[in-house]
Length: 444
Ligand SMILES: Nc1nc2c(c(=O)[nH]1)N(C=O)[C@@H](CNc1ccc(C(=O)N[C@@H](CCC(=O)O)C(=O)O)cc1)CN2
Ligand SMILES: Nc1nc2c(ncn2[C@@H]2O[C@H](COP(=O)(O)OP(=O)(O)OP(=O)(O)O)[C@@H](O)[C@H]2O)c(=O)[nH]1
Image (cartoon, rainbow, N blue to C red; front, side, top):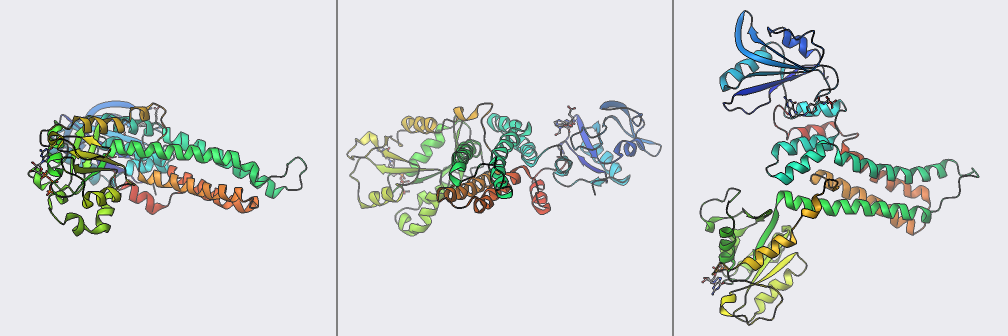
């Protein structure tokens, strides 16, 4: 079904110097030759040819046409790119001509999908291409490039290799138990390799979580009883950053969700509107709601008023947040401090919050995570599959510890193996692929 020719405008739909119309499919060079004046049909490979796009006898635009012959192309099939003038109207006109001549409008991500289906890239590389298009900072772009180059593919293949060796050992033992030179395999003998493999997986999982905080920002919630200075802290934080990155609607008082950038650390403030609801906020939210907010957060800023003794309500909030990744902030330091609590002293009102911002920057310093060979997965899909792989392996390890017969352990190991395969899209189901590639932009 990959034989039809797909076409898309690959550049942005704004006026520009040049636009690229991308086409891919069987015999696409002959197809374009039928309405291009330059001679491309007998060029061997990857050439750029000058000429006119023709509608019958009429010249439509002066163009440069690139041809990509054979399997070694972006999609893994024959491709053509028409470089026409970048006017909105003329680009449309050339593109419409391609469709009129018989090309089909490409779906979102269809070029990348073909590259995947033709085996030129795996799913992790396809996702990295999409990440590169949406990357809006240097770290994200570097991460995407590593994915495109196959960094994820490599370390997932290594994990698969380790796992298949363990599985093979078991299978040999099940199939040829009578062979003298196959020493009898006990669960304990499989343990060291399995444990070290699980540690490798868990390392990657942990590192990936950190990197996703760096990429997507740290979801942050400010909690504290009324009047301790939560709004003042938010304002001081907002004042700290020089550029507001995302849509912060209206005045700071209206913010529900917004982004604060402290150097390379991005805080995604959640439900900051809630902090203005004075008085019964905590009660009104109910234990459940506030817990879920606190649960959702990667970082909880717990504010207390240091100028007056802690009361029951402070204690309750401190208790509720004790298992979270929290920073205790003792505000109103300008009025002196009477509370005996470990925390960071600031004065939100006087905008003295350096101690806090430095602390946040230091605790989320990811520079060490970002080496050339850092093994991290790129997104939630990959992360949850890796967690699944680790969990299945863990089940196998528990069974090994209980000396369960090895042939009963192998099922869990296969589950783990399948999860790893899914990261690369091996045996991926059609609907999953449709869903994934539909998130790409047209022409990708
Ligand atoms: N004009 C243009 N620029 C572009 C792209 C494109 O498709 N067209 N790309 C699209 O995203 C990116 C480059 N990515 C590409 C990735 C692989 C191949 C490719 O043909 N790979 C073959 C042969 C490689 C080689 O010659 O060594 C292969 O892997 O077999 C082409 C472009 C960015 N710039
Ligand atoms: N002296 C002093 N006063 C502060 C400081 N931070 C906040 N305040 C004052 O404390 C009062 C309450 O501050 P807000 O920022 O509105 O406190 P809040 O926690 O958001 O209060 P609610 O919206 O009622 O939950 C205001 O009068 C602030 O001016 C501080 O660092 N020092």
